[in-house]
Amino acid sequence: TSRGTKMDPQAPGCEPLVPEAADGALQRRPGDCGAVRSMEAAVQNGVKGIDADCGGSCSCATCHGYVDVAWRDRIEPADAVELDMLDFAYMRDEGSRLTCQIKVNDGSEGLLIRLPQAQA
Ligand code: FES
Image (cartoon, rainbow, N blue to C red; front, side, top):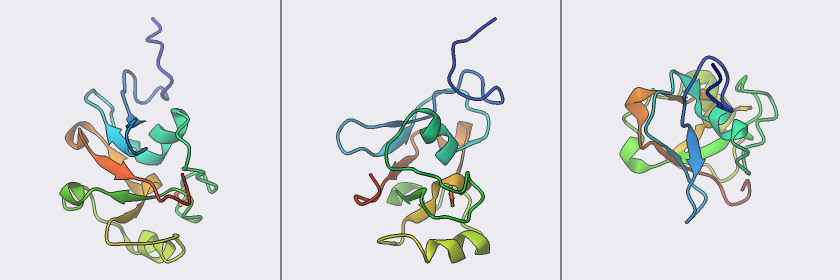
């Protein structure tokens, strides 16, 4: 049966990261999302500001976002490759991550990611 989802088949029923009306931040809504990556969830929902030029292979930094301070210790930390690539991110700060490297799953309900102004 069709569940009418826009997400990929690996994440049926997923209610992924969606833009918040107020400031354009992305927030992980409740729901069974499997393990998709933030960038993929956002791109599939037409979020402006995530170009993801490299398709998620951690080599472009056009999926840069700022993880809310409450979430920085609750998601997997950036690895060395991501940290190197973040050097190319515009307006990098302590919350900067490449959203293609952040997994969203059941444990990340409420995850909040803001996008850089220049990227939005
Ligand atoms: Fe290129 Fe994330 S999509 S680094």
